[in-house]
Image 1 (cartoon, rainbow, N blue to C red):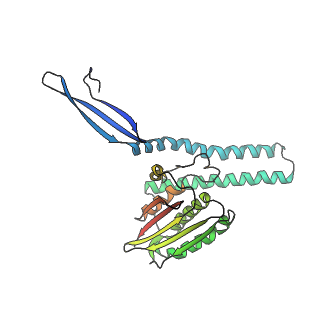
Image 2: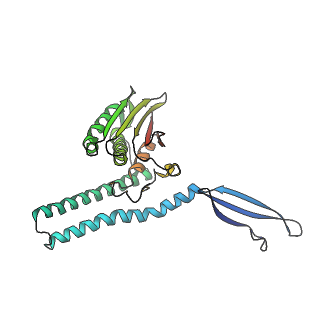
Image 3: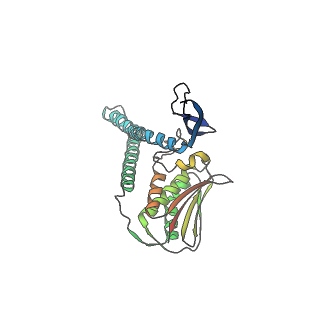
Length: 275
């Protein structure tokens, strides 16, 4: 505090990667002289990071929309103006237009999904389902995509009970987690999908052989548009919404999600569903 003004004050200081809020208040004696000070320290690191994420949200949405729209406009104008004459080149441009249109559609659908989930304005169609059967189907679907990077998807499935869940939504969770693992796993490596039963529920994990995530960022990967490697995010084809959708779906089922770096490398994403 400013001793000459004898007023309380507040400062934010950076210590070891953390943001600390320090509040100082003077203690006055009967002659209005300072004889001491009260200091309150509060770790506001997570609060500041979340505020930063919220500020980035609109910017990220604009960027994610603007980039494909620029491609669509540029390539369409080139075709209409007759700049592209060769059939092969025209087909190449049309394929890019299709890819960017699908990307926009996926982004809009994911934004609508998140909006409904976070507002509580969506319902789950729960029924008894076999998670193991669902895992096998999703792994089969993802096989061709993984094969392009020479990645093998293995699974170790324990004998687990049926669970009450929305099959389409849990399939969406598995697709997002496996798709995420494929994007971040290097060529020629493998992905392991594991299911396990507990007394109170079941767990499914997806482990990749990627670079992992800095420990101080793990708590934030479930936020909308949060990307650890922002410079390469678009090259990997993601929208930055997949893990946020995963968390909302599992929370709606009364479960929980978790991510942890593995000692041998890579990261393991897990979700738990109650029986």
